[in-house]
Image (cartoon, rainbow, N blue to C red; front, side, top):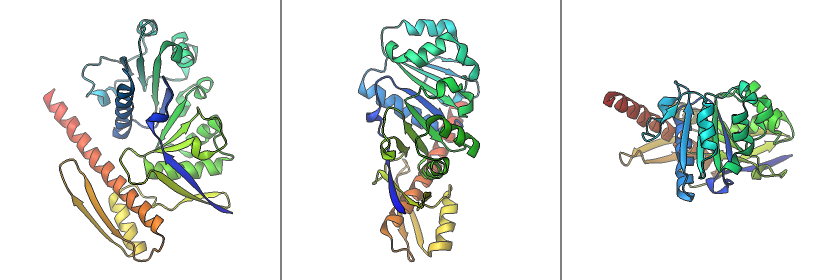
Length: 303
């Protein structure tokens, strides 16, 4: 039996106060943008208070724009003890320094298990979920899952959170979201069997439509989007399979784009729209990466 599952775009407005956020995947510019958006949202919603960043040497470079913040390169028990007694909102980011050994650290346990009592918003960034102790994986409120996770990693994520009935459904659903929408989000604050209320996508860029339609046929989830990850691949795929024309125009230095797509052999307007949005997202991600790399080079020259 075929059905359509609607996956909605995640809104920061739906986050609870002082959430515990886990971000899984290799650290690159997309996760930097996500963290910046989270911080901007928290600052606009209410005074975010103090910001503390604990990042490995290799990941510290991604916080070069946070010039007023001193980045600590290792977990410091004395500093954490000071943070816990502060009587204000606090955001703590652990990037690439948390591993399974932290399950026995009393300060880390206090932050993760009782952070809301201390008015702490906790953001942990890990390349793999296996670097987080099994005792702690279920304690997060929101889990952002980026690309680069193997089937084995997705199996561990599935075994931890069990958001859908079987792994095959989970695997196909998450591959669909991650390959086309930047990241998938599990909302663990929702106690419901409705998939569309606990699984979302993070799109990074504004879109005219904030719903991703995923078709299901006999339990096999499949996307009607083109499963390619570069603009050139998109263009080649469309030319070979849809006999279409593709035009892109640049409007300004902020990389605002205009795209027209003629799908000669496709009668389904929703497919045309989804493929169009996917191509736009890919092109914007490529351009944002160029901007980010140029910014890094500029900062390096200044330093």
